[in-house]
Length: 86
Image (cartoon, rainbow, N blue to C red; front, top):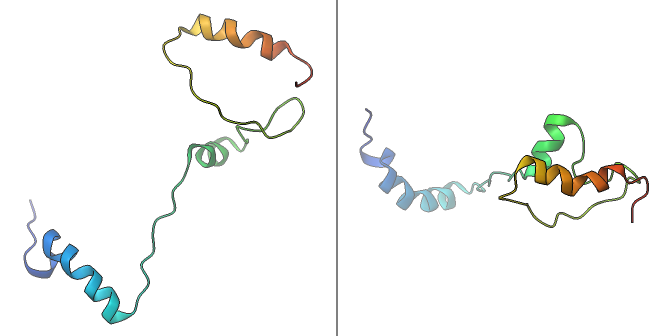
């Protein structure tokens, strides 16, 4: 186990961090947030919100929870057999 004392201690670092950034005139960089859509696109190289029938942009409305797999298949089967969007 490593314990930090002085400037490296977590409490002291948080207190002095802003002062150090002002003195050294550095700009704080914030981490870029990666959303689920971006992760999906990077992993599978497919846009999850692009319609496979017409290529239009779809809108995410929510998740369906509490259904069994067979119920989900029955709900989405008519959508899968559709040939035209709308």
